[in-house]
Image (tube, rainbow, N blue to C red; front, side):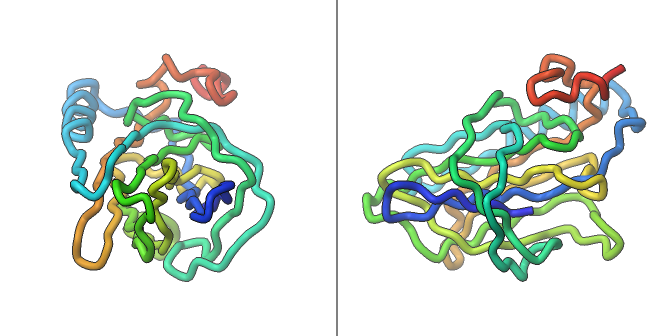
Length: 200
């Protein structure tokens, strides 16, 4: 589900917090996993309009409300009070509930960029086999704006390539790819958000 973080500045930070589908019993061949992660690591695009860009993993924050989001599978976003820090900057994401992943970006223009469309693409999800979700937000020019997707439901835990793309009209502001994998392939993240039991 998409989440919004309200900052002290005049810009509202958005958090693309949504859900995956638990597939902890699915194993990928080691060689294929390595190739997929190498591919994901290479896929980062940043426009000159973006002064800073960081990607990584977050642990689940507590939502304080919701807001309509018709371009998403859930139909609403979650609103959170405080922006979570990245607990890791890897883009290999374990398919486990309460794990989130996304992008922090800041505009080079101090006035920020409004009307930004976030396009999230991913493998088929849910009964309707959705492969993309969208949300309109803004990118601050005074501090980083966080957009992330969080796995809250089992149906969201789909393995494979995921991508965040931020668009201003026809212009791509940034595009960042992640690879969602069986949690046993990223044991270094075990316990970071309390999912150590899923790796046994």
